[in-house]
Length: 295
View 1 (cartoon, rainbow, N blue to C red):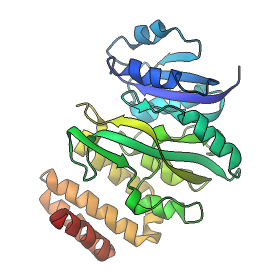
View 2: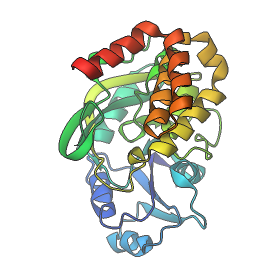
View 3: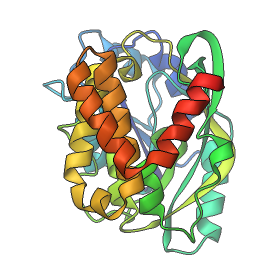
View 4: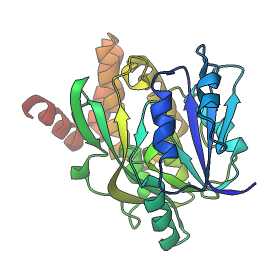
């Protein structure tokens, strides 16, 4: 039976956090949705938790093999029946009115705009990307300026991803492929998708908080430096032609990769990437270094 919105929530374990995440969806003012919970081969009994809620809008799917968030989201997309697509994370909470506000925006905006995204209030991390209890920040950074529908959005997203999946609502037809996410990526899969997405549609960024995000869990991918660097390198390799056309963005990502390698003890390789980044974008990287040194 058709529904207006299909919400896809991948989960691997997190039995304690999951009920609150689900409740933040079920309490939305907009009610015509299906919630597809994709259990990514959890070792905990996620099915019993989902079945106990007893809401007919919930569909439970269990993957036989753990494939990561990208694979779990693709599994949910294959089952989705909605005109619009939304994503949720198992340790986050939607704020009230999220769906209602975004649907109203998309219905007013031109059809060439396929996505409305917004902001997230993050607990467990500050704006300098330091992690710890009691730290709070708002993402994406407001001081960097809103993503405009009149700019080259792909060039902008090569520098930094401003499309947080769980704060976004997508028209189902905004992307031509059935599978949206690269299942070989265990981090940065949302950024990789965003870069490809804006080759097909425009994104409207609503400077409004839609989500409470939690970065305190020890299993959160944001804490895994090695996975992030491997995925960053893969995204850069996949989009080498795009980065070649945008040397400043390329330089900034090379610098990020180099500093990450340096922190992991790969100092010689890290210095090579840092130098390559400085050659391509000296002004932007010096500004980043100066902010870190002097605040």
